[in-house]
Image (tube, rainbow over all chains, first blue to last red; front, side):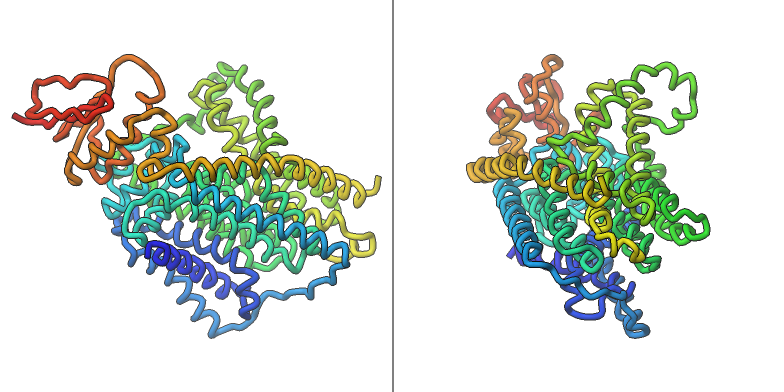
Length: 459
Length: 140
């Protein structure tokens, strides 16, 4: 019975995401809906999560009804918009795949499905996460939302756990699982995280289906999924993976916006970035990094104006939470203060940290044992196509450089002992940038591997 | 080397590395599945207790002794930084919800002690929960 209830929540997230995609003009047929079902699930997760993060600090009581209402909004919007306009995204006919290519696609597809099956078996068998941050604050925070029917700043409430300033999206979404299950059972969460990871891969496949040769798409997505630290993190009930998947999907939408100049890609991007901002403290900064990189890649301030919409969504998503923290006088456990970046005395006093950070952070970012060659390959492809297709190429180059500099800067100004801070966080803080690069890999590789004749085609 | 050949070479290198690292990755997942299959009941809900040597059975007994709407606090030995001592409060705070952990704030109706005898003063009743855990009821 619990499985049926959780399944209904997942269907609800799918319906919410499909509502967004229908309203934005992505879906005109059942075939489109199936192709984009993975994207729909990720967008539905983002939308419901962002809405819950917005209304819970305003005092809304957590309930199944609240989740239903959050999901119903986009479905209603889809019905209204769909009745007015039936325009959908232009799609190109799929290119014929040669026999050798079909074999490659088949092998990659079987490998991806097989790996997902092994991953599902592992996360299902393990039960609840044993990651320190999961049971010391992420999961208990979700339980407080479930048991105390919303955000509770009293003893034992959401603010009595570590990192009380972290925004509430992940605890709220985990609490949704508990609401639908009827009990706070943490063993239910890992499979939900697996579902999000699988939907992410499916979502990228659906987004790039008509734009990237099938062989390149299949191999790129296999490379992305097989990164050891992705498999190792699924089911850990930590926010880093959902945050990375949200940003990766947003990056794919923004890259396609750069390529196709179709504003409808900004609709899912706005919800995905809003959700990213509400997932972790650094989420808003990461969303801004992605949007700044997109603006640079657009190479025109005027053409970048539409990016203000997703930027506004990301900021709006965390405003109620910020107000709630202040209203309830929550003492934050910040490990750094951004204002210190402008304090020369402070920076000079920890000059040695800069050298160590600049040395160590790139090692984490390009650690082959954790991330294989996915990010280097994405950067190589970006460099190869930057002249003829600057949009997506600059997006990955600029976001990686900004991310690298940002992380080095954070470790420079952090109050924690540097080695301890790096050892306990760097493998996770680099993940969003690796996943963003990996998410753009199919598109960039598809462009880089185009034949000379096809290279002249507009992108 | 033309750009296309460079991209192809990069892709080939990435595929080789991925193929090299995939078997150990799958083995790790298999090991996770096998280890998970050994877990039952509370160990599936609190796998970290097993990992850090915290007595999960005592935590389950605490849940049966403390009413769901009660407020409690935890007393730990002042010395020692072994992982069980560090992990105990977090695991208790997680598992005992919706019972509220008062932390350092006043108002606790129950006091939980781990590897530390409870002071008799101010407590009306003390229960030996086992595994080094004691539960005191405030009052009297």
